[in-house]
Amino acid sequence: MTTTDDTKVLDKKDVNSYLTTPDYNAPTHQATKDTQDSLRVSVADAMQRYFDDLDGQSTVNLYDLVLAEVEAPLLAAVMAYTRKNQSKASEILGLNRGTLRKKLKQYDLL
Image 1 (cartoon, rainbow, N blue to C red):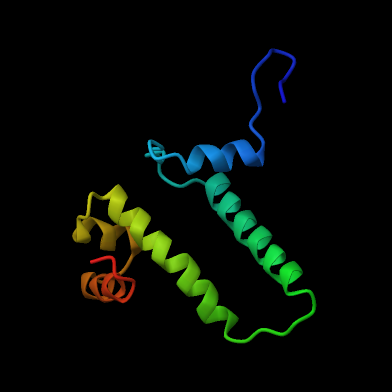
Image 2 (spheres, rainbow, N blue to C red; image 1 turned 90 degrees about the vertical axis):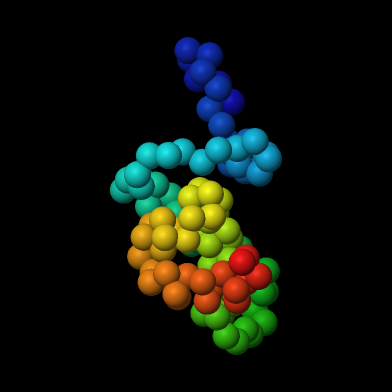
């Protein structure tokens, strides 16, 4: 898709492709209301797809499932962002450093 000034507007597929390329570097700006809303929308979309895929079947322990699916990549991303500096990562995450180490071990990230 292009705009009237020939600027390409990325669709969701383009963005996902861009984000999954090995040379992608996450923006270094501090989170804004827009990025927080974007994360919220992404989670809501993912949950809607999950429920759609269930097609009426029941599920249990959804909270634990979602936490495990979100927490591991979150920790991995923050550790990569901080170049494995646990002190900086714990500060960014708002976790005690000991708690961070425990979670890193839990997900085999340490």
